[in-house]
Each structure stands twice: as C-alpha cells, then as structure tokens.
Image (cartoon, rainbow, N blue to C red; front, side, top):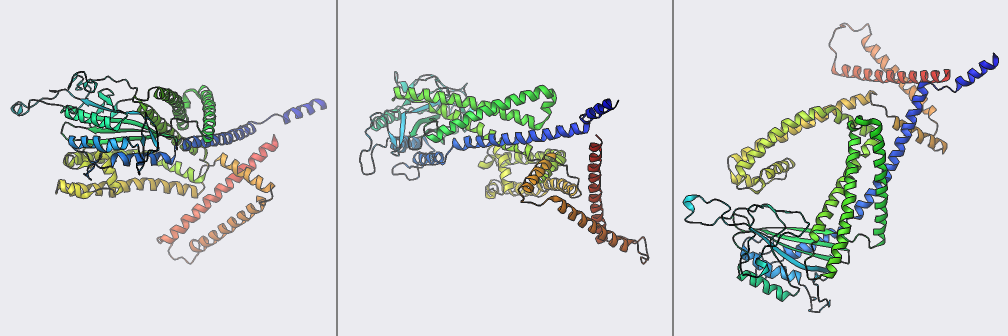
Length: 613
C-alpha cells in the first residue's frame, strides 16, 4: 500500500494543471512573437538596402541637366522661344531645326577640339552616348470626324476632331514613295502614351534622324517644305535614349508636342533615368546577394501563410494583419517577376543595339517597366513599415494611438460622408463657375485637388476674383468658413474626444496589459540584475507601496476633516469646483489602489494554486 501511495504521489507531481498549461502556451506564444519580430526586422533591413541600392542622386542630376539642355535652350536670336514655350507650328519647327539638333549632335569641345573619334554615335554634353538614332513620330486624325453646324459649312468644309483610336488617320499622304508619309503600325511593346488631350497609340508616321547633323537638318527642311505637319496632326513624339558610363545610368527621353483641336501647341516631356545594367560594381553584387536573401524570405513567408490558412481557414481573412501580409507577398512576387523580365529584356535589347547601331532602340519600353518596378517596391516597403505596428503594439503610446483610432472610427466614417458631400458640392461649383478661365479649375479633378490646396493655404485668390467678381469671393469665403473652420475642427474634436477618453482610462489603470511587453521588461530587468547594473526591484516596490499608502492616508485625513466634521452647518451646501476636483482625483486614486489590490490578490491565488498542484 505504501508503495502504491508513493507511486500515486509521484505521478501526481507530474500532472500539469490546465492553468499551468495555459501559462506555458502563452510563454511559447510570446517567444515565437519575439522570434517573428527579430526575423521581420532582418527582412525589413534587407528590403531597405535593396530600395536604397536601386536609386541614387545621380538620377536626379542626370534628368536635370538633360532637361535643361532640351527644354530651356532658346532658339538662336529668340530668347523666349524654347520647347516649354512653343505655342505655334512655326515655333515648333524652329525648335526642331535649332535647339534639338544642337543638343543631339554635340561633336566638339568648347575650343572646337574634337574629343571623340566615333563614327556611329554622338555625345550629348560630351559624357552621354546617344544610343542608336532618335525617332520622330506623329499621329493624325481623319477629315470630317466631327460635324459642322449647317449654317457654318460655307465657311469651313473641313473638320478634324480630337484624337481617338476610331478617328485616327492611317492613309498615306504627301509625296509618294517616301516613308515619312506612310503609316507604320505599332511594333513596340510599350503601352499607349497618356497625354494631356488623349491616349495615343504606338503607331504613326515615323522616321529616324541620320547620324550627321547636316543630313538631319536637310531632312527637317524637306519635311517642312512638303507640309509633313498638317491640320489633322494631333501629336508628335521625339524619342531618343542616352547612356552615361560614368554613373552607369540610362536616360530615356520623350518630348511630346500635342496639337489640340482648338489650335496651338501644348508641350510635355518625360525623362527617365534608370539603371538597366544592374551588376557592374562590387556594391551591385552585394545588392544581388540581398535580392537572393529577399527571395528566400518571401518563400519562407509564403509557407508560413499557407500553414496559417490551413489552420484558421476562413477566420484567417478576418485579421487586418493577415490581409496586409498577403498584400506584401503579392507585391513582392510581382516585383520579382518584373525585375527578372526587365533584366532579360535589357540585355536582349542591348545585344540588338550593338548589332544595329543606325536604328532606333525602344528603351522607352524598358523605362516604363523600370518605373513600374520602382513603384511596386516603394509601395511594398511602405506597407512593410506599417506592419511594424503589429509588433510594437505593446508600447503605451502605440497602444493609445490604436485604441483612439478604433474608438473614433465610426464617428470618422460618419463625418467623412458629410465632409465629402460639402467638398464635392464646392468642387462642382468651382468647376462650373471658373473652369473656362482658371487653370486650377479647368477640370473637375483639378477642382478637387485645388480645394485641398486651399485647405493647406496654397491658392491664388486673385485668379478666381478676376474670373467672377461676385461668385469668386463668395465661393472662397464660404468654403474657408464651412470646410476649414467648421468641418476640420469637427474632425479634430472627434479625435480629441476619443483620445481624452483613452487617456483617462489609461490614467486610472484601464490600459490593456501586454504580455509581450511584460516579457520584454522582465527579461531586460533580469539581464540588468545579473550584470549588476540594476538593484533588485523588491526594495523599490516596497518604497512605492509605502508612498502610495501614505498618499492615501493623507487623502483620507483631508476628506474626513472637510466632509465629516461637525463644524459644517449645512450638510446640503453646493460643492465647489475645487472640492469636486479633489473628490474626482481621490476617486481615481482609489480606483488605482483597488486595481492594484486585485492584481496582488490574483498573483497570490495563482501562487496558492500552483503550490497545491
């Protein structure tokens, strides 16, 4: 019997209570969270190295100097005529024959010394090699694509509408057997160009410039005399690419001149400095190793998310952080695939360029995908930083922020409906009243963004006052009053009210306890105590408890003296504001003490239960 009892007690010692199991699971969960945080910080560091490694300040400066050369260089003898200020077809031809050719064919130093003996290429600013030859392309619309009012048909028998794919003219014109007047279908992989007045196709009437500057000028003269630009012309693209070996950057340039149906010329431009040859220096190979590590992380995260999906099933998609994780993985996979595609296409196109040096290389296609890749990586790292909030919610400030937003989210949604009703009403009013005269209100989209600028203080009041002397000031004053002074202050009041409630709850000890924070603090305290850099906390705790007890004693004596004294003649006299404040503070302190006592009792009960087991 004695042997059996000993065995029973021995077995019972190893039986773990449900509470101890729960505590053990929580500790494992906290440790796994800390490990996940550490791994994620390594991943974020790797992603930051990738993003900062793919851009440089040289990109900005290369764009700046090339833009200055082709956009701000004036026509010889006309200081005010450059590409930015071109407004007529005559000025456009002057730009083509002047600043464009001077910039493309820069073959001698400032003292007429020939620096480079290159037969099949040109140097822009002496440091940038012109890749292949430039290409010029125009798109036209057919005649009679719009309807002329019958009473005005005697004045105008031709009508050219704005550019659309349906209105595009693809028939030959001008001198026969000359390729510049023959339509060429699109052979490019680039997407359609989104201009000011329309979205333009990749085909058109196109030609390339010769290697010689003299031959290029003769070609422009021939095209000008034979009216290559007609009334149906709606857009002309000037495309070329350069490479700077000093900084290993390609710059893809597109100058656009649109000829709207209203007449005149409006210019726009694109300058894309991109790094298409990725792996040249030792730092580039270091970036390549970071890319491999990034791919390994993504594979690991995909496996983890698949396991979570199998475990939680449909409840997995109810968590905001899980949806954010899926978005990060999707963007990462897209960025990896675009990067592989762009790198392979870059080497393929460069191989073709070396074989055919007198043809136009379509680097605009590669620049487009490089910019999309940069956009995806930028969005990816933005959400990657946002995910940090998942791990630092144990911080008191972060917890207050998240609690405040969760409490006021319903009020903010209701306020947003009211705000945007008034905001869009003012936007439509501004578009209809000032749209024909003020550039900031020329479209409904411009009106919306202009009103955001008004809220920020960036606005030209004189323009709308000049457009309408009555409705201009009325619109401005009422918009400032209702949107800026009323609605925005209501928005701030909603957030401030919620934050005050959260702050009050935290001050009386109602803040949500974070076990992860407690684990980090406890491990930090133990480490500091082992290193003898910090004294044990028992003495400190006793001092704090003694101080709290003394404070409560003082509160009690003051209140008994004031409210329980027999000297008070009227027991029902009104309470002053100061007395109410003291009572409120006493209640807050009393609630803190009760909360502290309850936590101490819970700890004692836990110790008793564990000692029994």
